[in-house]
Length: 234
Image 1 (tube, rainbow, N blue to C red):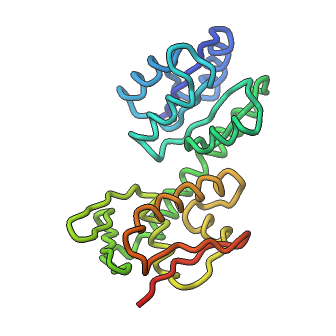
Image 2 (tube, helix red, strand yellow):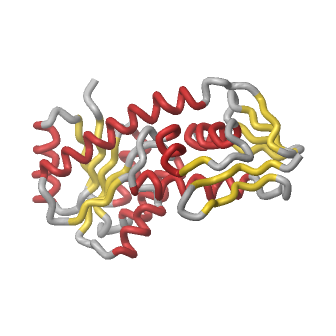
């Protein structure tokens, strides 16, 4: 089956050119002209990758990306935008995007970035299976970590975890009370260690800290410029 891409771009000429080019690269491309139409298309089908313009009528790309992430935290997202300021890039990565391409850009460069992201996603799936292959139930302080059911439990509280959160917490657990470098963590869980993955990992670490905040004997300590340590006091 062809890789399926959702392209959300309100510029008719650019959208037509991109759709034609991507289809020549043998991708299956659905097209939406604004943020609302993009969200409706996303909810109706399953996509391997999503390309979003930022400045769109009715709903901007940042808002659409946040709504997509509420439903699916795994599907890769690329922003296409004329806004190249650093603050916009930071907002983009905080919403969970995988890449950020500033207009004007070369179509071949876009195709190469798409292929790199899809290749990384395939590696991520393989590495995620390796990291979580132990399955089982583990105790993290007062929390019960149920790998097989992707769940953290504390008394009556149940926290559902995404596959990436499970993989990251599993890796931290099996290296508990030890320093693990950022590079090793990224390679173990994401299959690669570049700037964009590093920003994504920071978001996941923040989420795990939030989940574990109710036990003062459990903490994920940041070792400046080096890595992390899951500290569990007996």
